[in-house]
Amino acid sequence: MITKHVLIIEDEAELRKLLARHLTSRGLSVLEAENGTTGLSTALDKQPDLVLLDLHMPEMSGYQVLKKLRSESAWGKTVPVIILTDTPMNSEHEREEIEPLHPLHYIIKAMADPEDVFQKIQSALLL
Image (tube, rainbow, N blue to C red; front, side):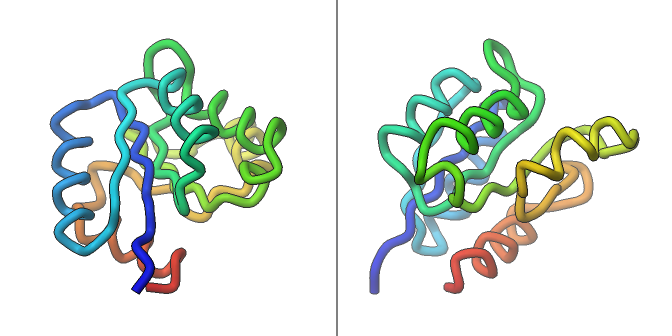
């Protein structure tokens, strides 16, 4: 079986570590980044099979990371991205910004637990 690699770009250390432990226990290889700048660099360098991305982070927002991934890299144009954020997509403006970047899922942190996140990743990676 080929191990799938997931990059978690999340500035909340406790949540990032919790997700990393949960995904690792399910057989995934996990990379971690604590902000958007490090996350983008890691993503482009390591080219994981999927990116789990927070939107509100220091240095570079998740939106900026996703926009750069989609525009600056052949790999980045197609890599599956799941957004994991505190903020519901309430406005039409937010939808117009995010939807053209084709995230697979938009998960609200308060409404999901690590197993929910794993299920979405499992489905995306056809595990």
